[in-house]
Length: 120
Image (tube, rainbow, N blue to C red):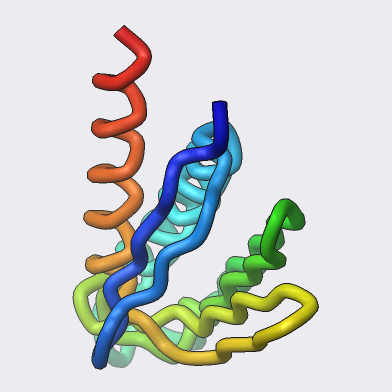
């Protein structure tokens, strides 16, 4: 059985590629940690002293394609404003673009829901 297709909706257009559900759960975990950092930054009161920098999310997956996701939570005011830098490449093509974090979360949830439903 071939790996299911993950479709990531970008600001303009979308990209689909074969992706492993286990890797999707790993990415989901990395995004959950990023969301915690973004929420902590957003909840800081202005003028409350020097903010503690939070670690960037750097996720990499190497399968049929290479996927890299990067987000620095320190530059975004909230999870809803955050964007993720995506690089998707194989031996023939390379795509580097930004995607909205909330949209990636929705796309991963949809992918995992569909894969989970098809395994029963």
